Image 1: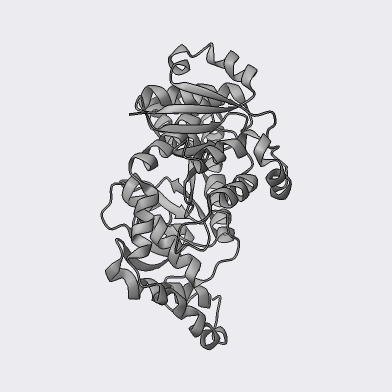
Image 2: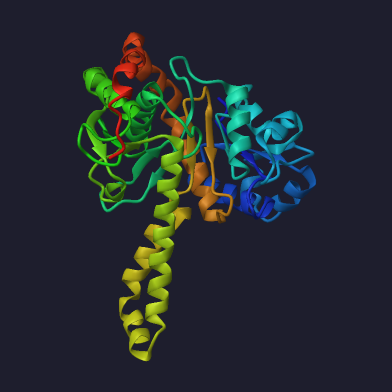
Length: 360
């Protein structure tokens, strides 16, 4: 029986082939039960593999004459999908030659290509970008959507909750993940009509879903570790994620400045170095690398463009686990377990709610 394969867009990311291949080599040492399909310039990939003989025997090369530029518009990238490393990696998933595709390239292009090639699962209207966010709790927080859909209605948010819970059950080993909707307050009357409708849907259907719905949360609660899945639209999610990343960098920069301000501070740094190293590791985006496009008929993982080899290996690890744990089948089963008529009800309630909508 042939081993499952992960297709890697080896031309994506800021560092290109070297980091992609080094990351795949690290992943291979951790996941010897997988093979790799490295997609990109054949000569450059063959040369890079010379430095990783352990990977060479577990990797095939698929030549791609072109790569998607970081600033390329998704519509332009779509027209070149058949000749780019990104497009051919996704196509390998479509044709069943790979169980998942991993890319550190242009997010918009990756989303467009993946959605066109793989389509969405039955019962899912739009895919959502989900990622793991570090918390003070026992495990990371699953957060979605983080930019795939800037505007979402109640039906979309409801579906995101189902998909996010399925993802949390895999990555965090939870039986019934606690789900909250990101809002500007925790009271039931707060937020837009879409948010309140989504909350009503989740309450109604919670008995048939493998999740526990726990109402609304505010952004300052995302890192506490009090719940497992945060659901929001792509605009709010992306803003919240960038704010959290900025806050983490601010704390790191402030600590470095404080510890270098005087001789006493430098001595304090030496004493507290184990704690600061732990903090740095916990906030390092490479340790949480690998966002997933949930809702597609195939596994596609997005790596940070500036990820190191370790970060790339972690993104590949996410892909391997989702293949092993049958993410697609789990989401499909969860969606099928709920009456489709349930998720059409908010559209009929919207007219009654719009007049009373409030943002405060």
